[in-house]
Each structure stands twice: as C-alpha cells, then as structure tokens.
Length: 194
Image 1 (tube, rainbow, N blue to C red):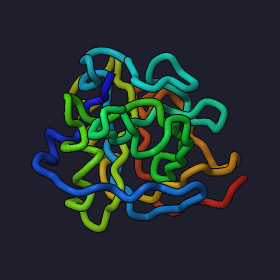
Image 2 (cartoon, rainbow, N blue to C red):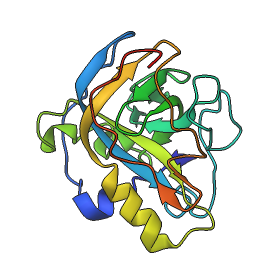
Image 3 (cartoon, rainbow, N blue to C red):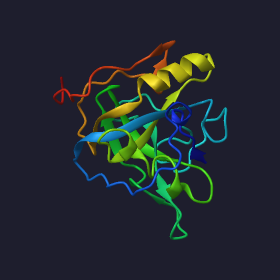
C-alpha cells in the first residue's frame, strides 16, 4: 500500500520534476523535506497499511531505537520493479520530533509514483534535496487536529540516516499521542546519550 502525503493538500506538490539525491549511511542531512501522513490519508484511508513491513505489520512504532516509527519514502516503477529512494529498513532520526523512524512504506500512488510526491518535488521547498513522509498516527483524534499536527511537522529539516542508538527520544505512538502533537524540539541533533 502506498502512503499518501498529508501535506500535499496544503503544499500542492503536483507537477514536480527531478530525481532526489540518495541518502548515504551515517549522513546528517539538513536538506530533507519532511511531511507527515496519517490515519485519515493513508492508502487506503482509515488504515495503517504499509507497503514494505520490516519491524511492523502496520504503520506504527514508539520512536525508540528498538521500536522506530514507520516512515514513507519516494519510489519508482520506471524499471518495472518497485525501487525505493531509501532502502526499506533504513533507520532515520529526526531531531525536530525526537524520534527514530524506519523506512517501511512508500509515498506516492498510481502506476508512475516517480512523477509525484516524495520521489520528486523536494527542491520546490527551499534547499531540500530529499523528501520523506513520517507516520504520525491520528486514529481516534479529530481530523482537524491531525491535519494541524501534520502542518506543524512539515518543513525542511535535519535528518540523521543510520543513526546510533542513544539520541533523546520523546516516545509515543507516531507523533500524536495522549491528545498532543509532539513537534518543534529543534532541528539540531542533541548529542547521543543526552
């Protein structure tokens, strides 16, 4: 199941072109465009279905190193195979939300996902070179609250690929839990173990 992009409604990312630069293991990148997808706009809507399960059978996770939250990435079917922009199973730490994530889903629907969000279009948002889409949950919450949270976590940010264990974590299911939206810790990665 391909994940839809929650913020496409807000950001109108249609008509984008280009190919993203692959993230490298151990990279700390400050040019990653981060969006969010939710219970309401996953494919199919009202589900936690994911396309490339690694640790989870459905979108989820608490954000710890051992239980990272699902993240969706762009993909292409140009060659006939479904090729992800970042390999399934790659862990990513996002300082803005203080959670670890794991690539387990794809962003962009239809027969040519390479023509749409996540695979192309990051460059339209400042200096971003890569686009990732984090699962934030939202089941049982008001749709307006969930969309607001998605907007709060959207933007060009720092991402650490294949991070070590030990970064600070604000654990919870997705980014929305206990009726709160955890966003805005800051883009600077705190030292490991702090």
